[in-house]
Image 1 (cartoon, rainbow, N blue to C red):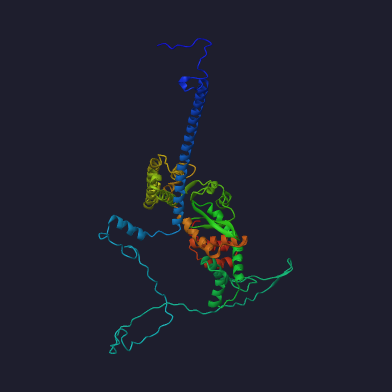
Image 2: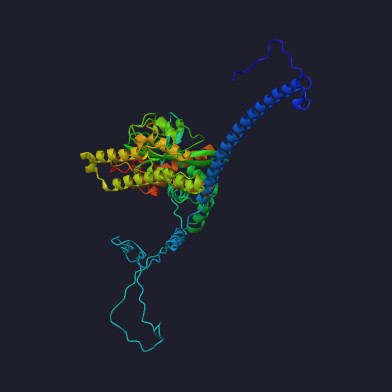
Amino acid sequence: MPRVYPPFNFQCAYRDYCPYLDGLSTQWVMMTYQRAHREHCEHWRVRDLQQERLSEALRKNAELEKENEHLKAKLTAIHQKQFKANKKRDKERTDAETGDTGVHKKNRKHGAPKGHPGWFRRKPDHIDKTIHVPVPKSCPHCACTDLRPLPEIKEHLQEDIVLQPRTMVINFKHDQAYCPSCNKTVTQAAKGELLNCSIGPVTKAAAVFLRYGLRIPYRKVQELFQVFFDMPFVPASAMAFDRTATDKGEPLYEDLKEKLRCVTSVHADETSWREDGLGHYVWYAGNEELAVFHIDRHRSSKVAQSILGEKFGGVLNTDGYAAYNAVNAKKRQSCLAHLIRKAEEIKKEILLKKARFRDKKAIRFCDKISKLFRKSCEIKRTTSEKDIQSGRTRKWINRLYSLLNSICLTPLADAVAESFRTRLLDPKREYLRLFTFLEFHEVQPTNNHAEQSIRNMVIFRKISFGTRSPEGSRTHSVLPSLLLTAERQKQHPLKFLQTLFTSETAPAQMALFNTTCSP
């Protein structure tokens, strides 16, 4: 039926009072309807807005909950890192959970492994005194007095030391001469003599060696000389011995840096230090033949350049610290032990989270990366210089990079694991530095050499709490470098220090370096 419209200018008779609307005005009803429609639309707009805010709040709450879980796991991992894990207890717990009683397992025999050469004390090359001991009057086991002498003689060599608190005093009688040019009386030093010094070079060398070789405090050094040798001096004199040795060894120290910049491979590392309560850093750079320590206020790239130069022509083995990039080494090798430890720490943090926040792909990624780097270290132990020259290791390098690319192919949901993945694939950071050790026989896959070399300075820091002045930091840079270099050159540090006190720079340099080595 077609809709019928009212004529033009039509006015409803029930406009002000409609019996069908319970006497309400049609105009008021229409206005109320229109207002209700607007309110209805406003309510829906507010509802949509609140829904958007609720969705955003839920999203942020999920992100905060995930971040909170990550921080809690990280805090727990840092707390657990301070304590050594009880591997025996963890193994027993694992065996109890799996029901393994361990009956079929064979416990490892205590002691050195099979085939390991034993250690025996050397036999004395001379006998200073012989004492005849008669047979006992009674048996020490059963107190029997009816003993029968035997013709065989049992010999027992016992080596001991003789403590004789004795010093050797030498009277040097100098023939003098007059120099008309200087208008002074001059003399020359005899062999083993320190002019105008009442304490000889052997005492000074031994004091320096006790301080920096054995890490004995100055007061203990003074007490040792007082008790064992009856050689009295104050602790400040022991410090003066160090300063004298540092002044004499400064040219050797600078020459040591120049030699280090010309070697084929170098390990480098740094750790914290304190100078008069302020934060400093002790840097190390060296290899199997040389060692250089340097204490500096900064940890910037300029310090690395001052040690290794602006363009190092060998292979530099470091951790992931970016300051070594300024050295512009020809080849770089990253410490795989740091990367394996990093992967294990990431996995441990992920496992500390709740199950719904764990990224299983990231866990598998960390396991595969650790296994890959461990396998590459095993390959290094089996390769020889002949394999490197024949190019056999190049196949291993290509294979390892192929495995690395396949492991790092898929992005990860865990932020820390994803950052580690991109770091491994970055050519400017780790990617080109992972397997350099397979190209050179003398390069190692880890930076354990630097870690062990700098350990003595770490122990020294715990004992002395650092240094108190720039002169002390300079001494702690020069003397440990010379002593460790002498040790690696198969020279006894004590003998080298005696030469350093009594000779000029050239003889001291000859005493420092072994002529059979090529620093």
